[in-house]
Amino acid sequence: MTTALDRIIDYKRGEVSDLKRSRSEQDFLAQARDQAPPRGFAQRLTEIAASDENALICEMKRKSPSAGEILPGADPCEIAKQYETGGAACLSVLTDGPSFGGSLDDFAAIRDAVALPMLRKDFMIDTIQVAEARAHGADAVLVILSCSDDALALDLTQAALDLGMDALIETHDAEEIERALRLPSPLIGINNRNLKIMQTDLATSETLSGLIPEDRHFISESGISVAEDVSRLRKVGARRFLIGESLMKRPDRLNHVQTLRHAK
Image (tube, rainbow, N blue to C red):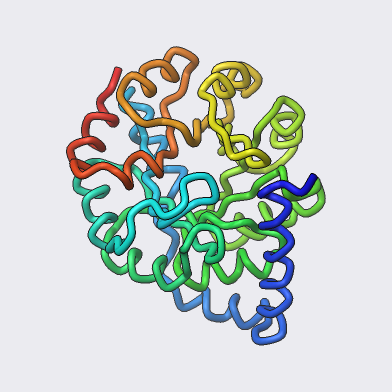
């Protein structure tokens, strides 16, 4: 049976092929050299987590396969400013268009509007996307192990590190955590959303978090809405969280970010 992730990766291959016909990776690398240095994505998360507060990666996401349109007519820069004022550690910006309504134009506009480190969240299947991310000012990229084999995951991670960026390695099960531990990035995300059926369960982080050693940094992703969710995940050691859809929907977004940051 074809899953949502299968469909995304299928059209992503077409997007990358089109990209390579119009631009080379070397073009993007040259453009990247003109960018300001990365803002220190992992470092910012660590600074906040070390104080025993919650390091929040707050996400700009216009729509999703599971939720449909999340906030029609959203102003991405205004939302990003609210996240920043509320105390977010970093931002995550969806740049996938067909499934999530994002773009690199959104990314560039938000980067000009705030000073926070920013993750380009997309489905990376080729190192040209990493170079493209840095050329647009990204401080980190997402490497999803569910859509990359070990060789590709290493190439993507190393390409990011070589450009001074961080790489967030996303996992969904024990096998993927084992694979992530062989990669040269300390950031390991556990996605509580099953990308094949697009359902979330916080028990995923609770079950798998013990497999991540202390020298790596565990980030719980997806399905986190309220302070009670953060408190629940703190019991298994989480101090870093990626939160998107629930924040996008809240009218009291700024205040809620403050609440989540200080939840115990």
